[in-house]
Image (cartoon, rainbow, N blue to C red; front, side, top):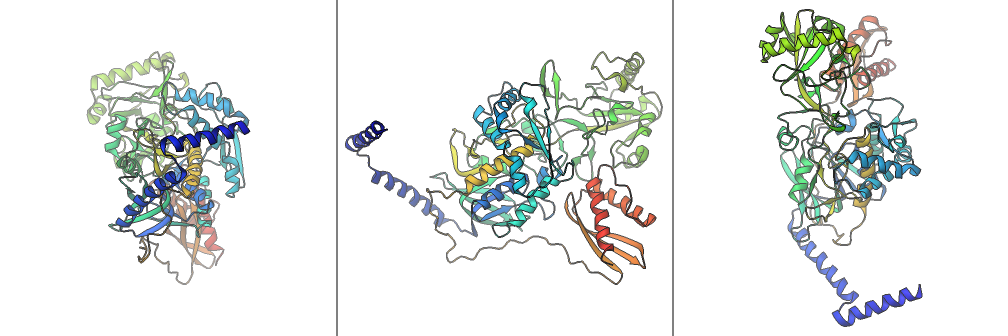
Length: 629
């Protein structure tokens, strides 16, 4: 030890003698660097100042804000969506969170190396950082107040090491928004440390052109651009580009594709990062595609899959008397198998499912009557025929002409498929024999199918500290990211991995962003300036008349409020006066529940499949109102 100290002192002495090096010189250089930064700060017209700014209020943004606040930072959390519609994909996801035991991390790394396949990213060091964070997810959710966490083994691919992967589910139920509610409650509990601005998207980063330090965010609010300083760091958590059709064409090589959830994810964070020199990685990777029907009311795909057997992810409609055909009227896939987040086994390699577009589901009267295509569709799918979502024809030839595919090819394909049904063997795609059901009962039907996906995976590259990396491999000072905005998944995707990553890198990025930096002044830039207070829509005050009572519960979109009108002990009317549930799927369910409660005069009514959370919230809100009578 003494020898090491002596050598170190000799080295410092030589540097001082030969090169003129001194600690004073080093400190002076640092002071000059900070001084240059101060010059830039003085040139900007600032409208507000925080220690940390987090852009995007989904799972990653909420986590980063919590982590930064718990480090003592004053945090600004920016959200593009109106109040009540925040949450990104996290709100609508299954709610499973990746987890792993600490002693299993090395095996987990082996599994993730297989998921990475032949791609160069992420590095083994990034995988280790990810899995080490995954080993902390359970305790962290407990720390946030989650009381009932189910842990279960979850391995999506049969690769070595996958047997050690676990998943977490709060309250033991999927599709309940339980994870997001836990995060949202934690943000609200820290309201003294975290300010949330709704309808206030980040539109640009404020970067010193000399030092490359990110000093803040340009925020749009009501048509005004506000310059908000972040003393210590900015964390980008804006999700992917699920709803940006131009970026889908540019990066996914698809003419169109539609997400199943987050309407506000349009690639904003990717553009902001690119403008300050960020490197992008695996931009072509998505958790998809599978094939679905486009919901014209939301311009997103209906949330459930129809491929594969009926389970928690799929309605199983394609296992009825149904085939999928492409632009030439011929089949191109096994309808009885749901791709693993859009990936299929292609000659021993997992690849994105090949598509022929436009694509159509072709089926007969037997299939139509077998079940609603989606849980929220009408019995026998009759309303959807009237709306034009389903095309009807008396013959296959007529149907082909109506949807614009070759009638000869489609008729030939139906004959071939029906022969497979008789033989109970599909020699082309290997469809499961118990799902080989003939298409032979008129009338016949078609639905146009679109590529749908859960989320994109690409974006700005990050390192183990959550720092965003520039095109030369250097960390961009004071800039961090988390979540699916440049996730670690370059190859195939392990289910629950994205929500796991929201927590893992949300914590890492938030904590590191909160640390006081020594390359910039900590003095305020707001001396003599009045901070701007942003504006967004707040719900109108609800007025109650005699005999009316207000009830509230929490749906998948946040608070759900109802006005219940009573006469004596009878419910005469129920009005939903505030909600942010999904238009179409959830709003249709609310109409059904309300009619059922009034007709039966009881709260003991069936929930609507596909909108269970909304159904329960509405029933509980009515109960809350009645108890106030």
